[in-house]
Length: 357
Image 1 (cartoon, rainbow, N blue to C red):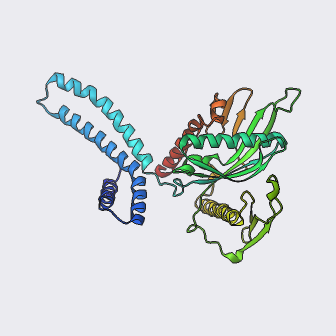
Image 2 (cartoon, rainbow, N blue to C red):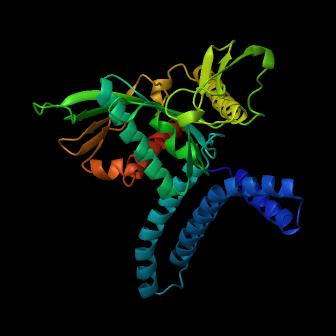
Image 3 (cartoon, one colour):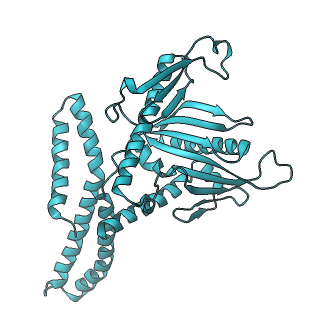
């Protein structure tokens, strides 16, 4: 079932890393080794769990195969063997999933972009609600959120908001949030009590580091301008706002949240790198898979992925046909894990089916 040599190699590599870490390497090596060890821990634990379950079944089989085993002990061993086989099957499934190829970006932070879609002011209000749900979820996970840019709606919420979420494993948890989120509810401005349907679009991009993306200065058009919007006397006095245009891709990033032109440029470059990195990842995914829609979370920003029905208090994720009647807890970030876990399980099962098919 599993290549024992491969399992031995993983366990041996973990021991080697632990020995190197205990010898006091330099700081750069320590960070690299610690990251590798962290990545190996899950699969190494799964291997040990599987082998422990294997040994348990083998021990019981040995007892049952021994002619000198008395009847009372034989009956106990036979009874225990049934539950031991169940544990072995569960450990085998856990190991299969742990051995699946990992997305190299899963451990990274993200650039989160939430935009109002169809529905006017109500769409902007929903975009705000959705962003706050992610903020609350991030807080529950111990992640930090920094807003990079925001354009507020006329009645509140956001026409568009872009933020960085820092933390370990952020992309791995939130990558399936990309797509169109539809809301059905009675807007505060609705006098007849009618339910309206509007939408917000979410894009989740893995944070890119400078080593991931090379941006040539000659490919950039950099414009400075005076910041607009609220800001008191500072507004319109200095040209701190930045607009970057990456000519080859046509990607434009505008940043005016900071009073420092240098800070705005740094933030704009971070967003640009992540968008270019994401575009390249999607291009490679398209090359590898002729039909990306077979995979959960294709990343298609035009794909309707979830509906939030406020009158009925339910959330439905259309990719896994999951409906939860706990809309309030989802919007508080508390029940979002239930949806994310279902998407991850479905994704893993599809990967397993692909490997076994």
